[in-house]
Length: 486
Image 1 (cartoon, one colour):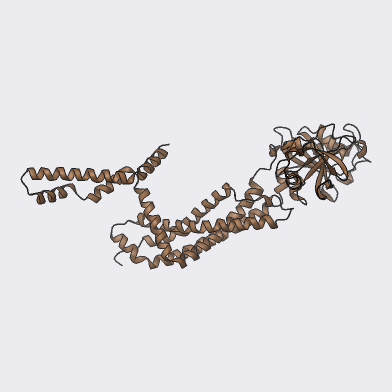
Image 2 (spheres, rainbow, N blue to C red):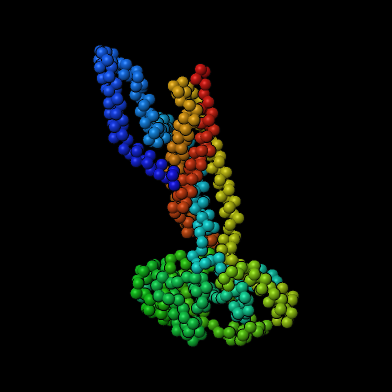
């Protein structure tokens, strides 16, 4: 932490710069007066005494520079000077500054906007509890690589597969909401009472479904989505326990889900589900048999399945166990071998983002190349500008400025230019994200949730600094090698 104390000490010294400068001048004046008085005491006239004292003491400015170096604030003062000079210099060339800043802004804006999409879709965890333990369960047949489960399969996977701790099933659909409000048709899902628990999501208000409610003759209850609750019921906190009209019948609201909650299949389907009812099915109604035995003649494949894996288990383990179990069913003749039936799980993150991940990464790489091209163009502009500044840089060199000092000055100008471009780029990125949110299809997972959050803005800052270095380092090194004699 020595660097931290050094930096804070430098900042404190810089903030008290005027007071310290006054103290330094007073101390130097005191030493000059003492030396002058000594010469006067030796018999020299006052003017000659002051002259000899000044010669013995040396240059005042040299001593001031030494004191600044001792304080450790020299680099901060130089940086402040470089920044002020860069702003003045760029302000005198508005045409060059505008073209270079806009060129960088296009690259930075496109990269930032697309990174925002990638961060939301690929890097932000799904809003479930421990999503790495959640998988979507599928069946497959000849000609159907991904299809629904039967009730028999649901029961078997829930009880006979060690790597799977729990399985829940659900169906999707739509309902009509009536009552005092304007009638409205919304997307809905019928879910088993354990689905919310498997996903690890707790309602914002009220509760989820109880086992006794998830029965064919159970009470008619409903859980509302946050957006529907806000839009249709004004965010009324007293909605829990209230009866509303669902498909012409009364249903009691028992809970409201948190904002942004989605079932796994909502991310790649027709849009978000806004209300949830109980599944309320019995094995008999599905042609299923009691226990793990299968009824080969009565299986209705119409359920989506979601599973929570046993702690420490993986989808690969679950898939191997499912394959072994299904192979046993084929040997017993329950599933004809000609059907090529199989069951498998897909990690929920892969289910949601698997199809869009390659495309997003390819586009992000392409936009990165656009940023590199923008940096190359700005580097070319800076090289041309450096040719016109040879006289200025030669004078600086002749006055004692070394190559590192001139290089730092020119890199500071590149940084200021890139910051201008970065600010414009973030504005362009905000417009791009707003456009993406409006036009993104429902099947494009999570894109509509994209925002310019602090993480994306930090990325924009890093990209801006990187662009400043890429665009400025070669022109700065080239321009700093000017020969004063020439």
